[in-house]
Amino acid sequence: MANILIVDDSRTSRRILRGILEGDGHTIVGEAKDGQEGYDMYAELKPDVVTMDITMPVMSGVDSLKKIKGDFPDAKVIMVSAAGQQHNMIEAVQSGAMEFIAKPFDADEIKRVINVVTEG
Amino acid sequence: MKDNVFVRRIAMFGVYFGKYLQDIGVLTAEQYEEIIESSRTARVKMGLLAVNEGYMTTAQADEVNQIQAQKDARFGDIAIEKGYLTDDQVSQLLKKQGDSYLLFVQALVERKLLSLEDIQKHLNHYKKSERFTSLDVDALKSSDIDKIIQIFLRDSAVPAVVRDYAALMARNIIRFIDNKVRFEKIEKIHTYTSKAIASQCFTGEYELFIGVCGNGCHPIGEAFAKEKFEELDEDCLDSVCEFINVCNGLFASKLSQEEVQIDMLPPSMHTDVTTISSEGMMFKLPCFVKGQKADIIICMETKWSII
Image 1 (cartoon, rainbow over the protein chains, first blue to last red):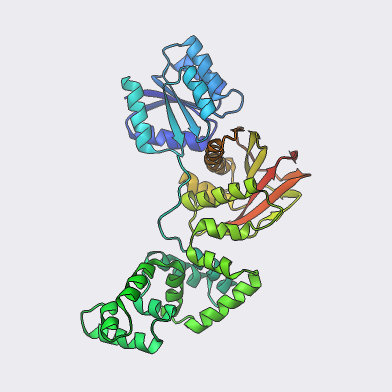
Image 2: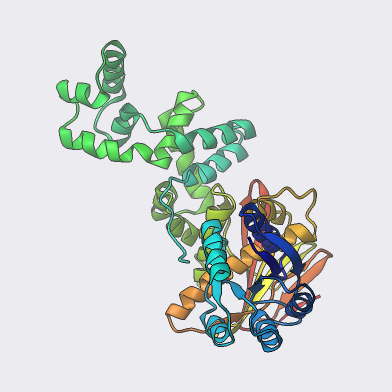
């Protein structure tokens, strides 16, 4: 089971994701509300996996991904997004994102993606 | 993820016509709620279907019902044996058993609230009072949300992209929030003031502001988060913002298939009295979610301000 950092500006999304992940036996080590806070918490907590929303204030998910991967190349980051953000996804892949989760959340798909990333 | 059409039956006709009957005092609020709930899972009786289609008279249907009460046989089989229906007619009627209009009518008749003749009379009045065309009434009877929502978007001032967005949000309100949602006609406005606003903007080839406003945000937030909120606070509006984000993502996905590129900005919310103003295209689509009013505000292509 993995230690996971959730980065999303939406409290609703953080709560739903936490419920799914904790229900599958993972530990949520922290929650961040924007990309800058996500980077700061990653540096402090060194989680196994990060779930990173794309559209956030202060610092976007893609910019936060780049910053985390720049300092921590082995970081495992899963991008989270509503549909229709293909261009952001492409940039995320090029910047080192490992996988994607779409909103609205599908619990089975989230569990599958986490397993792929943690076992990969 | 695709913006899917729903297969399950939605009691749309009852939501609109039933509300009208409640407004004119024919139904109480409790009767309305009970009938809407019951018509979601019931099946229309063959006798009522046959009379409604004009295949049988009420007297013939009553006769077959009485025979059916005494022997273990299906209505259709008895009616065919008596020469009242053909095999083809029975097949057609069987397909209509899930018809939401007829389920609602059946519920009214079974509870002796209205006769078929009275229902037709009230339906004619309803059509006139709302200035519905016959096609509009057929759309309401169809329970097809794509047809129904167009009734409320019919205004030549509304651009196609706004109409498309409104229809997408309507489908997703039914999918995620309340399949008994009721819409009213879209109108062009210049300002809107509320103390509960959840919103998100698009940039790119279309500049759009999408807001969901008013007390209806409370049931929307609760339904989407699957969580109770004591009041319409920031946590509740956050959930509404997430719902808007999902709708906007689906809309962006649809546009990307047409090679139109738009970006979504982070959602925002307002819990103090706030006014949205626009010099250009600004539209309000009212809807009633679990009995509470929410206004969907869409601004397009011109500068809008929020104070």
